[in-house]
Image 1 (cartoon, rainbow, N blue to C red):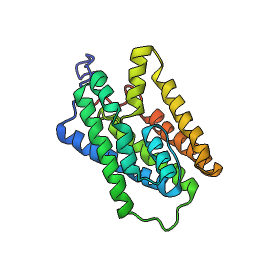
Image 2: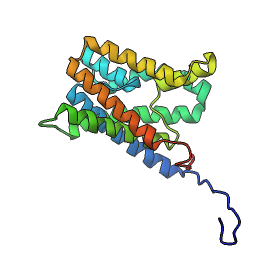
Image 3: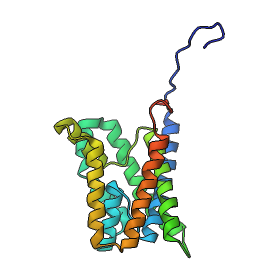
Image 4: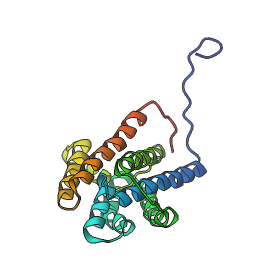
Length: 209
């Protein structure tokens, strides 16, 4: 209610350019730290980051390179379905995660890292970083883009497709990771999704870009 008793309409304030830039830098730095923790503990997450980690464990190729490569085919879909602006933001975010994950591994060294701690804290960091990016209309590409495309093209629910892909990645990990690491990866994935489910709800944040 306004001071004179009338109901005032909520004013939505758009994000400024510098706010978007700072958010993308902050979000990708946080995600990168989570990825480095997972890589050190030999854990797995979902989506393209999980696929890149799985390929790293299976082939010995660095995460930053695999993450960049697995995202490349999806940019065409992003341009067609989500527009140039979203695609550029996504490309920037993916590139920064690739860069920061490589640099963070040089900046931070863990003498000892308990796997359960890595699963919870690493998952929490990735969830927080994704939350920052989502609130500035930025994603980390790949599977999310394909999920949106298939939902529009074939009516396949994006959430179900994303879940199926994550399950496929975890299933493939049976041949790469020890069972204990696989179970902890499930714990970490739960932390990531809970972080987003609790904090990324319609109406709780109205800033737009």
